[in-house]
Length: 87
View 1 (cartoon, rainbow, N blue to C red):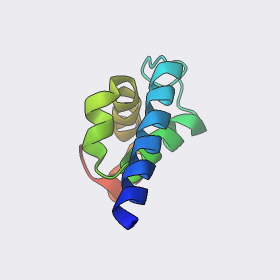
View 2 (view 1 turned 120 degrees about the vertical axis):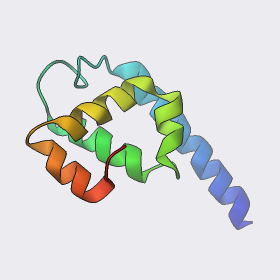
View 3 (view 1 turned 60 degrees about the vertical axis):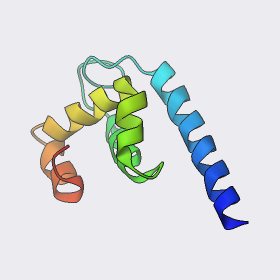
View 4 (view 1 turned 135 degrees about the vertical axis):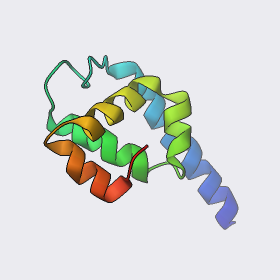
């Protein structure tokens, strides 16, 4: 049924976010101190994917760090905030 498919999709999505969480070492961006396209991708997808963004923030602190860095970056921040608002 549809609820079972949705639950399985959420489970898979959360698994992918755990993999991303393990792969990055934010300082403050995914791979260092310079903003890259990967950082923007992580920030945007962490808001879109997985239903509520709270799950990513609660279970993936490294991803949350990257998302915060993007949200507060002087160039990327305004676009992020226009679409997602303040965290």
